[in-house]
Image (cartoon, rainbow, N blue to C red; front, top):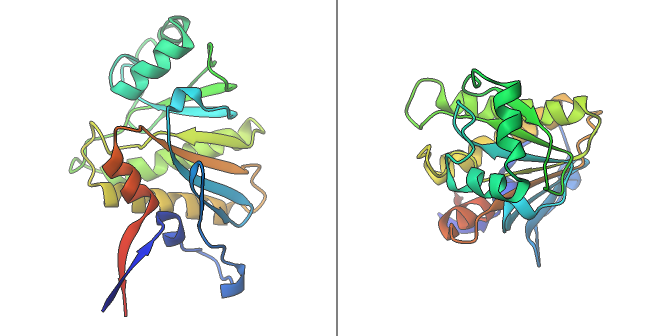
Length: 213
């Protein structure tokens, strides 16, 4: 057995038939790892999610939409302004169910909308299924709004305690399933933005050690 360092993004497998020539190699750029899957550019980078310039930024927070819950959500709130929390309370006074998507404006962020969601802790019932379904719902929401770019945080790798490789592979699977099932999708760019202090998540997200014969 030999060990090869493969990009997480190269572990995305199509659910339809494609020839080997159709597959695109992962590229290492100044901004992180990037590859093209069909017509969608998928990238993994270190950075601050609140600084991304895309159509939609995804926020992982509590089901009560208390935006100071979690480091990433708090950073988004601080950058977007207090009006973001007010909008959440006005539009979703009862909060949301696990895996649902709450849509708000962007406040001071450089995006058009924020998609908020609350996921389950690893090991609880349907946690992995809800994680994958949430990614699909976000992509579907992007399509419905006729937008093309979205940035996700490192979903489930923090407070939700998912093993980092499990979270990474579930993410790949959810992306491939959505793109394969929606050949006319308007989605053109998907970014996963990992906090600079979370070196382990970034390494697992950009490279997975995979054994091949």
